[in-house]
Amino acid sequence: MKLKLAIGADHAGFRLKEAVKKHLDKRGIEYKDFGTYSEESCDYPDIARDVAVAVKNGEFDFGILICGTGIGISIAANKIKGIRAALCHDTFSAKAARAHNNANILAMGARVIGEGLACEIVDSFLSAQFEGGRHQRRVDKIHEIEDMQD
Ligand SMILES: O=C(CO)[C@H](O)[C@H](O)COP(=O)(O)O
Image: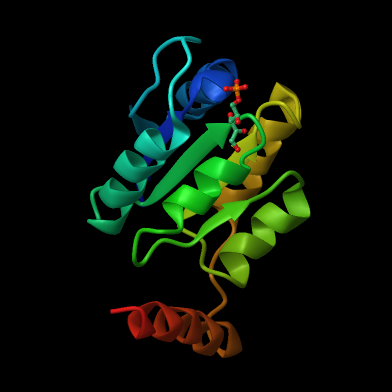
């Protein structure tokens, strides 16, 4: 299956986003860059919203979001119904985020990890498969909680 990704970052994540894009280019993985496009200060919820909505609408298989810590941008993305954004700073968590949580967005903090590790985390996230079974039941329960808010 040919993957299509949505990628976005705030000003703090801009440089790491560019490094991850280069890595995706090398791997021949298609993506759309939702910005930001410079290190000029901006607000991470704006980027999180655009990427999360595009992933939720099925335009992309997965999203990648980067801010300084990865915290704000993942919190914001998780406000979109159907989004399971996972903040990962190690490859084990990135793999588990897909295998157990069926995460559809990977979030990272550019002020926390370097480019090499970030690219390995992206690879781990993209190569893992959701295992279903008991994990599906738990993911369903997450979305039941979401539905309680309507
Ligand atoms: O990590 C972040 C949110 O979780 C932001 O990137 C960070 O808060 C931006 O800070 P500043 O405006 O001081 O560069």
